[in-house]
Image 1: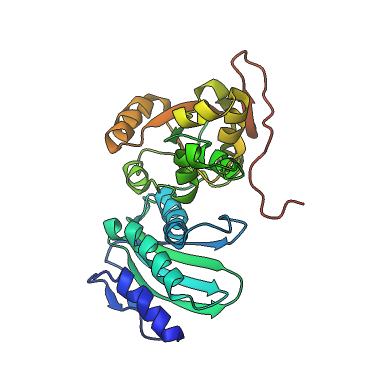
Image 2: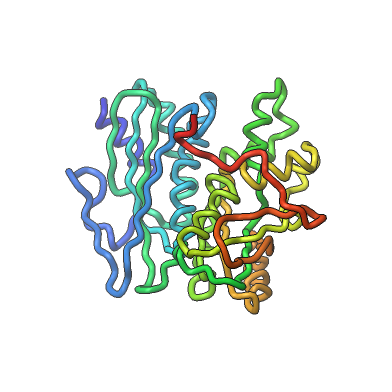
Length: 317
């Protein structure tokens, strides 16, 4: 039965690429890295009840499992190529496998990303994806290049996914469908990441919350960052359904947005904003890199603002 389920996944996700020598069906995949390219590799695990609610549809699980990994490639400025999928499920429900594979393929197809192998086993529902992408030597975006005077920018809007999770607790979540959609189907900013190559001095995807993830850039770069809370981009849906204070805290520490947070020289911020507008995601200037360490948030009156949450921590008590 295991091999029948693997075949079901293969049928849904099959993509022909010249650089895949041997894909699903052997003990290991064989792929060819193009000449003059470096390989970027990322892996993320999604656990039911931790990374997605228990009643999330299989199609949305498949989409999100790939999306969070493509977001990592986006933060590196890499071009997606191949993926591996390890799936642990309580049973061999064919409808679940079909749904998950459809969601995965729906996102993978536009990038011509090929699923080249993986594993299936029985246990609590867990989905692990490994993605591989290409970048030119020396062009990968890193967390360690931010410099004092750089501008801090973010793509898209922040806070929707965390708000969507809160909305699922409502007896009728239908009015909040747009926010829930951002939780279940994040959009990896792959094109944005590629456009930032050679311009951004540092980049990270916002998975654990803006303050936490920008803090990683600060730590890696040996700098501090000041954020202007009034400048944070928040969607009309978020501001319609939540008070300003709640919307702000979702944006600063909610996580699961999978937007890009990046730094650029101040004299290139306008150019970058125009490029991101053409790509359809937009980018907003939210702060600046300063001497020091850590991230400070300032309210509209210039006072330091302490967010209600510092960001997601897998091992917090």
